[in-house]
Length: 389
Ligand SMILES: *Cc1c(COP(=O)(O)O)cnc(C)c1O
Image (cartoon, rainbow, N blue to C red; front, side):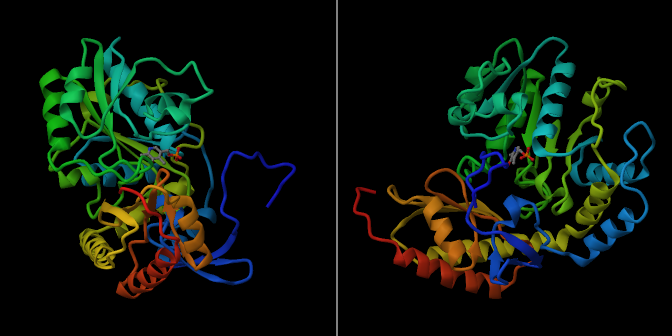
């Protein structure tokens, strides 16, 4: 669809969804699509969820916005729930992932009392505004936007020695995604987060985890770091928090919040009543039973993908319902995603050769079977490419 008015900064698939119900999306002609992307890990509980819709509708009928000049018992309620889930102490609310990362960087600098160096990972993704873009270890996203915010070192992911090497007297934090979402669905080895936690403790620096994509149940735990049995000093969340309404949050320890005084940071819209009322419902719905289901659905999906034995696939990886399917060199993930969408299955990509599968938590085996049959058909129809892989 060409437009004379809309800025051309997105590479959009040629389809518009006008209705959603549970795990299905519908285009203008009424064609049904199985949603295995969830608007990039956002609508994990499905579209048009009755309980979330009821909470939002109730709030819309009361009040939409008051600003943070006034008390908010809704924000307090959500913050208390996030403390209980995370093992951390205090929450700050904003409107997006990048804003959560910006706040985390500011809080770390305030805590650092002059120290400001932060170690992040190559191929990481933390957002598009200047702080988070500077933290993002992908040159192609930074190109054309120099000068960036100083103070970041990007190290190869999944190797504690690289973090140790990058450390200096000015270092205040290590900021990492527990699973790299935009960088190819990269899952580090089992001890990586524990090693970072131990290193940060030994140097008395902060461990910041960006769970904007992998948090909120996506991997089968409420927070992905809970697989590793550690607690970071700061965690950022956003995407899945309000099942489609814009919200982000930074959750941090008391040590950090003690350094933040009224006036140090803020947001006009942050923690607005409508998004927060949806988020409270979402946090309640992601209970232990659902988390278990996410884990077992994820295993079923990955095992079934392996059992298709498709020779065009190089690797299948992920945790819970955050799955990457890497194709051998020569195949374009974007093309394959386009074909799957034409066949009625919505998926995304992560890098050039990785398909990104982020199904809703409410799928059943029936939807997995449907996905597999369409996926197999599409992959088998791709031309053979002969290369050394
Ligand atoms: C999507 C994402 C962000 C940025 O979130 P926005 O809401 O798009 O600003 C930051 N970090 C991670 C890990 C993400 O996946």
